[in-house]
Amino acid sequence: MPGSMVGVLGGGQLGAMFTGAARRMGYRVAVWDPDSDAPAHRIADQSFSTSFADHDTRERFVDSVQALTLEWENIPVELCQWLEQRRPLRPSSAVLRILQDRLTQKQFLSSCSIPVPDFAEVQSVHQLHHAIKRLGLPLICKTARSGYDGKGQWLIRQSSEVAQFEQILSRPSSGVRWIAEQVVTFVRELSVLVVRSGNGETRVYPVAENRHEHGILRDSVVPASISPSDAEAACELSVRAVAELHGVGIFCIEIFQAQDGRLLINEIAPRPHNSGHYTLDACTVSQFEQQVRVTCGLPLGEVRLLSPAVMVNLLGDEVTVVLSGEGSRETFSTQGASVHLYGKRVIRPGRKMGHVTFTAPEREIAVASAQQFLSRVQNPPSAVPSPS
Ligand code: ATP
Ligand code: MG
Image 1 (cartoon, rainbow, N blue to C red):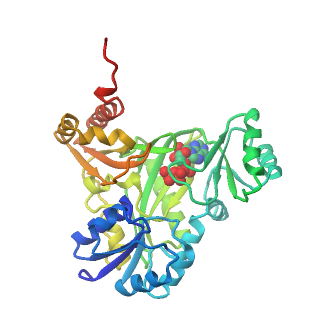
Image 2: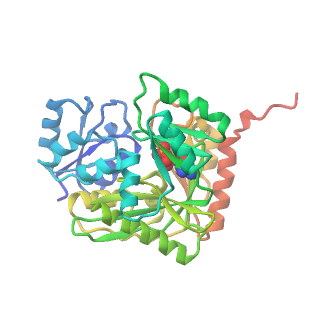
Image 3: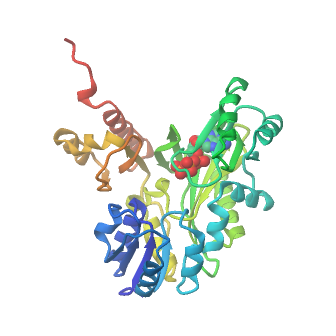
């Protein structure tokens, strides 16, 4: 119940937004993230910044909380198993075990007859050749574990590029498992947020349409520009996937709408998702409030879209445009703009530093505001060469 302490594993921007939602609802929050600079530490009631392997911390962490959740799927499964024997953890370690490995995840979905891009396991040159024979080129190879924002991915476009990847596979130190996937020629990328409680009660947010640049989410538009029947099919597919997992928590299902109309699941995240940030400003209940509710066993919230919305990520030094005098004034004074900055101290290329959500009575108005903003952050005035 509100007043008690809830724990979150991972303290990046997702953990910070969870913490904000939980505190607003009257909870106290304990954050465990080995990075003492992680954004959620600054607003936590209690902070733990030792390694996830530290046994003393896990005792103190679990003693301080009544319920647990996470903001990152790569938390060690053994730690989650230990924790969930003592306090409810949502999502469970069983779900993490399936989802934190791209191969296991795709094998699981296929075994449930849920459509995914054709894939193969690749750990040796022999398996690579076999995969190319079966799936053809181009192929996208991803490390089975970890990797985010397109990191740990290798695109083999044509046969002349195969040798380079063979070298990576042959490194003596390698031993890395890869998943090779057929490159889907998609019309658009979609994502669906599904919240599912312990008794199977389910809520589904409207479908978002996502654009990626260099493997990183650039922006999300809601509602997606798809037919009502496609939207219904995307939601049905997403609900089915979460039910097959017996998932309890909030899940984001990333989907490719292929050229031939098929909907294929790219991946499932067992946590709030960047493409769901629009829910903070455009829905009755945000994805983070849902995470609090489902973690604490409260009734799930309504998922009604109050306004069309476009969410634009601020990547790397794009954030400086919003931090500078003129750019900041322009952004904050844009009709319908909500600015979210994550307070990360170090700017790195492609790092998610914040986002801005544009809401408007009409989808097209929100899209136009977002486009204007994007061209401003991508081509800041100082980057334009002077005529002289
Ligand atoms: P994130 O953590 O940001 O969701 P990620 O690193 O987990 O990303 P993916 O979602 O697998 O990686 O891939 C990132 C992007 O690369 C996808 O959103 C898509 O644009 C592209 N991509 C990945 N797999 C495929 C594929 N099989 N066919 C076509 N495009 C793909
Ligand atoms: Mg992804």
